[in-house]
Amino acid sequence: GEDDSRLGDLLKELTCQWDLVLVDAGSCEDSTTSTVLAAARNVYLVVRLGETEHATARSAVARIRTTGATLRGSVVTNA
Image (cartoon, rainbow, N blue to C red):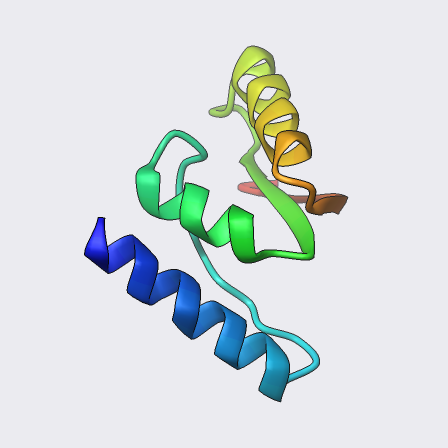
């Protein structure tokens, strides 16, 4: 929608001004996250130890790869 378009425009503007833009985007199934992924060059997947299921993480990796962004690594929380 319009909000996603404005978010995409903002992310493009920020990435032109800064070397690093860090966004806590939430679940890969969320529409806002799709907008962030479309604008991202590099992505780090955050998983919660003992909470994030393997199938969910694999699905997120597949979704990230379809956007053209480079998956650079993972951050594990609750470790």
